[in-house]
Length: 283
Picture 1 (tube, rainbow, N blue to C red):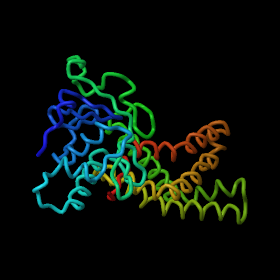
Picture 2: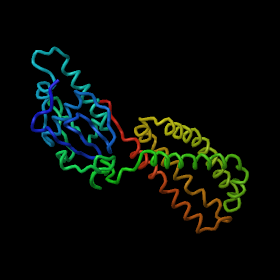
Picture 3: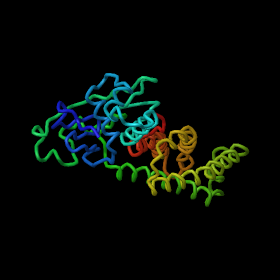
Picture 4: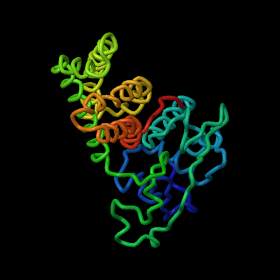
């Protein structure tokens, strides 16, 4: 297998939250080693050597396989690209790092910063990058928190909604009485039916999201994006629920609670994007 070129020897290449050690052949994310095989790493090396430029498939073939090597080149290169994208949590349809140039090659589109090992002081070998800019999320441009924090906050939101639904079903008669106190007749019945139906839909939805986070389902980001329009509608409907308690807690408190609940679905989406970046299986 070819080794890194001499011009690249002794360098650390940083891009987004990742860094590639061209000496040890390691890819790291926020200081933690990301498992990446030799051929995908060689592809990454060629791309970051020429950021913003197209690297042709023929150039990659010449770098990865000698002229006398018999291999299904197209399939092997596509596999290497897929593994590289998977390691970078990248997407072929919406790339942040590796962009496909149709039928010709690939281009590395993220900003690249090179450093010699001598430039890195001993403390910088820790899991914290040397400058705040290097800790930014590649999509959201916010400091990247620990995944345990984002998953924990998302889990708490799901548990909160689940408790809302269960309480509404256990006290449906009280819900009807409250609704009837300010919207008597059929309007109160409509509100009760809406509460029961959305709670019945929300319980299995929240159970799925809780189990997905609990088992750390790595495709949750893609699933949540597809579910988000329905989740948004459901959460916005339940955002007005505090007004059912306005007589008990006061209009001001009900308004504040509703404002907070209106924000929650967008907070959920942000937390999921931090903890579960989308991926693509395409080349």
